[in-house]
Amino acid sequence: IIIILDFGSQYSELIARRIRETEVYSEVLSYRTTAAQLREIKPKGIILSGGPNSVYDQGAPECDPEIFQLGVPVLGVCYGMQLMVKQLGGRVERAKRGEYGKASLHIDDPTDLLTNVENGSTMWMSHGDSCVDLPLGFEVLAHTDNTPCAAIADHQRALFGVQFHPEVVHSVGGIALIRNFVYHICHCDPTWTTDAFIEESIREVRNQVGDRRVLLALSGGVDSSTLAFLLHRAIGDNLTCMFIDQGFMRKGEPERLVELFDHQFHIPVQYVNARDRFLKQLEGVTDPEEKRRLIGHEFIQVFEEESQRLGPFDYLAQGTLYPDVIESADSNVDPKTGERVAVKIKSHHNVGGLPKNLRFKLVEPLRKLFKDEVRKLGRSIGLPEEIVRRHPFPGPGLAIRIIGEVTSERLNILRDADFIVRDEISKRGIYHDYWQAFAVLLPIRSVGVMGDKRTYAHPVVLRFITSEDGMTADWARVPYDILEAISNRIVNEVKGVNRVVYDITSKPPGTIEWE
Ligand code: XMP
Image 1 (cartoon, rainbow, N blue to C red):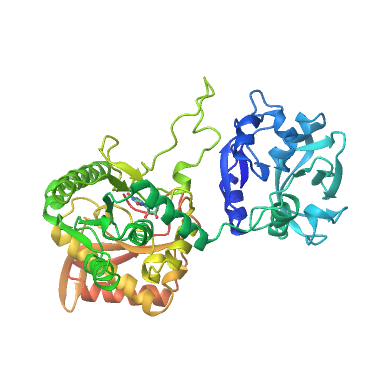
Image 2 (tube, helix red, strand yellow; image 1 turned 135 degrees about the horizontal axis):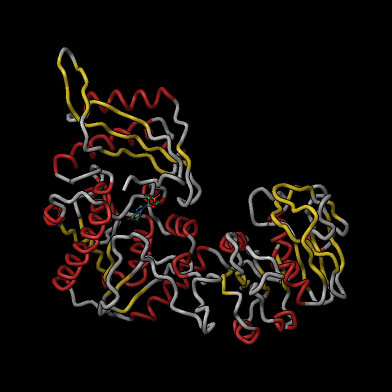
């Protein structure tokens, strides 16, 4: 295992992902983790992440200095390097000129850390401070035009630092550098593979639950579906998958889900038709937050009733992922006592966010995984591509894509429009070019003309998004002919819609969903 100590960088998670891509397991811990704690974890290497501070800021986060005496290789990245330099007796200064963006790396010592990194490689820089005096034992491995100490090493103690960010895609030799650190310097073995993970999780789940019964709320998304496949392999029919149909899914989706799981893969699904209940709850409700609250609340009601009917169960399976539990620099540590507080829980906006006082114990075999690792796992455990690569779909479903009151008539309109969007891009083979592509129904009406008749009907908004992670997003530059085809079909085929508009707002300032 490689441990990343997080000093508040937006890239700490990315470093962990990059290391795992080399098939070595890695975790992100708070910078407050002590040398004694690390001694117990026995990492093969430690990475100090970047961070937003200057090492001379008041209260700037520092690590336990004994970490440098553990005899474990350390790599400091950006702030992590500056901190290492400062803590070991060197000097860091505000640079005359900061360096932001791409820089060309001039290599002075092409050995260990920089093996296979080409001289002149582009690296991504983002710093205002620079190291000016290195601590005793250190030498410079590489520099850039602006930064004399761009990569440094104390070979004796196996301490390394880089001023640039090897983990971001713009850094051309970054992956090679990470591989060098992981394999040549830390001597890790490539054991973090999907097959090994499957085997180990199955063993762990069997140990944990024995022959007791486990309940899983299936949504049809990649997380809960992967979880279902994994658990079914581990405990067979002691797993009960419950699928609550709120009535807000896309056209044909609930039927398809049951068909896939139940008939094709022989993973029995308890289908709960709760459509009327949810619709009733939403009668007359227009406020987006209120909609979400009511849907979440009703979900829990139905879940509790149904789990009692089907139960008793000892365990509840949840598709918690690593980013939900990750220990980040500030979120997990009580600033007053320095104690670790409870890890973040997936509260976000997931329907399926269940109350904490449920009497179940939790089974969370995906809690170590990043989203892309879940996809890989899903694939290798037999999940069909249509689920693995499905666009993200919000828990409250179409209900938050109907602005204003949700009625069954409006749901039908939106379902048909949404189907046309997906159909047109699927048949052109471009479904996967977008992060999401969907339709939103507006409650207003506008005038149109069809045949010789005046129409007065709803507009539909098309929302096509490109994104890396859903946190930021851009509106997609969809070719006009595709927009035209979709618009024509929607206006002609969907009764109740006479106008189609395209949303050209990125996130921020817009959000991806409309509510
Ligand atoms: P926003 O609209 O916040 O969406 O830009 C970001 C991403 O999250 C998805 N989303 C949800 N996912 N439950 C979910 O599981 C929800 O309630 C929910 N709301 C938004 C959204 O589709 C986008 O991918």
